[in-house]
Image (tube, rainbow, N blue to C red; front, top):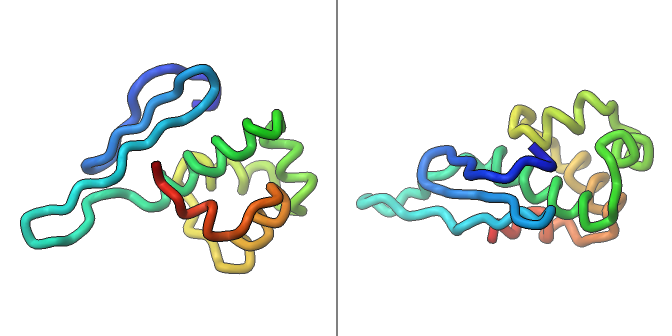
Length: 105
């Protein structure tokens, strides 16, 4: 997904890749006020975006963070529900505050 152009959607958000950057529209609220989005997928797209800004591969992020490459791939695909420790580990490796990983544009 990192070099693919197109639209990705889960629930009510849209994300697309343009010139190597992922753009994510903010999720919509349903009629009852609940958020309709998949935070794991949004988190994964944000990790991809920040990793690509550094020009890193998944493998490099894995090595630098001490996480398995397959685990990093699962994060980026939205298949892993990370612990706070691993969120902080990834943020530190990417040289951002942990809150930066939760900014879904």
